[in-house]
Amino acid sequence: MSDADLGYLSMADASKKLAAKDLSPVELTEALLRRIEAVDPNLDSYLLVDGDKAIASAKAAESAIQGGRRTGPLHGIPFALKDIVDTAGVRTTCHSEILKEHVPSQDATVAAKLKAASGIMLGKTATHEFALGGPAFDLPWAPARNPWNRDHHPGGSSSGSGSAVAAGLAPMAIGTDTGGSVRNPASCCGIVGMKATYGRVSRAGVFPLSYSLDHIGPMTRTVTDNAMMLQAIAGADKRDPASAAVSVADYTAGIEGGVKGLKIGYLRHFHEIDTPAHPDMAKGLDDAVDVLRAEGADVQDVTFAPLSGLASTNRVILLSEAYAIHREWLASRPQDYAKATRDRLMPGAFFAAADYVDALRQKRRYLDRFNKLMADYDVIICASSMDPACRIDDEAEVDRTYGRQARTPFNVLGAPALVQPTGFSKDGMPLSMQIVSRSFNEAMIYRVARAYERVTEWTNQRPPVD
Amino acid sequence: MPNTDLPPTLQAADAVDPELIEKSRAAAEKLVAGLEGGYKPEEEPVHIYQAGGSQ
Image (cartoon, rainbow over all chains, first blue to last red; front, side):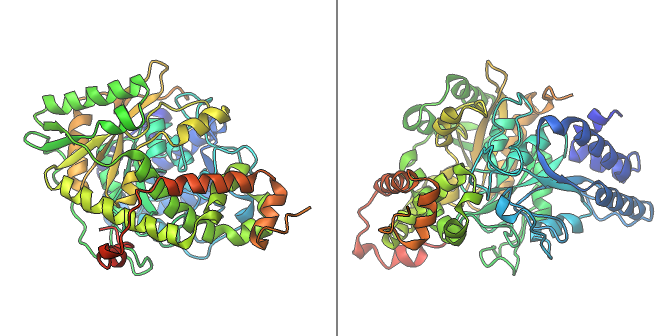
């Protein structure tokens, strides 16, 4: 197989080949490292690639397979980590001057879990600074680019993870999501991104943005791969007090179950009334719902709260907590942040404590309403981004589109939410939809997403990077 | 010159970007205005004790 074919090989297929010894972890890892060297100078998706360590891990994985000690489905499969995820002995910068030389002594739990599954760490990916400020051109490293058009924004804040996965430079990557930062790059780059239920994946060892809203999530090219990755990283963790003591479902067992007879709510007002979407995005959503209906789902229009209030609730909580985390550095070395980061962090200085508590009260109100809505539906479908990815150097357009999204509601609600591609705009940029369910019902989301993926062709498209 | 009317934690940021403080104050006010409001004491304690949880 060519390096490109190995780069775009699904995890599921790679796993079968590795288990059958038709492919070696070293062969796969070397192909990806060559691709990164050839393609990434145009994308800047990686901040750090540790080829020597990756090859050493791949050799160990190969030796284990040869010796009959295969760990499981991720054995020998390479991965990348957003550079706010701590890696023992490997620089973890948060894409910031402030932590430019920071080398953690301990792995984050997600990194440790992927290594324990015998995954091969390729490197650390670009992010908006501290998962908030970007895209920014006044940081020590350039921002990641969109593989479908490098002049366009890859979304953020898990921008490098989205770009790397879409470009076939890693089959899986970790992102983090506080106001949509797994799902935005998934939308912009045409891949699958899951923000699982609050507490489903440990945040231990990941630099926080907002304790109440932070989630960790898998980013992959296919739905099944995403389920495989979540399987490896989900579960309770004593190191994260918010992690949930809820048993982890088998995310791939029922994934081919189809949607016949499932009840799906279509939340149109987010993108038709609250924040009217670009026509290509709206058509992509309607077409996707038609596909699910044709597959046998019972789809009905539903309503929830207006987006603006949900977004305000997210931002008051997020910025209050983020400012508390960053205020010492903002006071002592503000010039070391990107301008975009300062602009986004500083409103947090002006909330009263009562404003923050009111936002938490509002969160509870929304959760009560959402639980009532979800009692009647298996999943809800709605928009993720209202617009295809804009040009990365158009600051005004980046600012305009930044809030034109429907992801923040599901950080407020803590509910699982997945984004997957639904086609392309007339300009060739990916379109997307979001599938949401009640807490800990990720398996149902994967089942619906896979039913859509199975009868559409978007996952098989390759961006023009080679 | 630093704006000494500001708390010390904001003076350095103000010095880096003189427009930042006023822009941020306006942004915060807009976000708070976006909350539904009407949080009544009689709704407590149910809401406040559960407010931090997500499930």
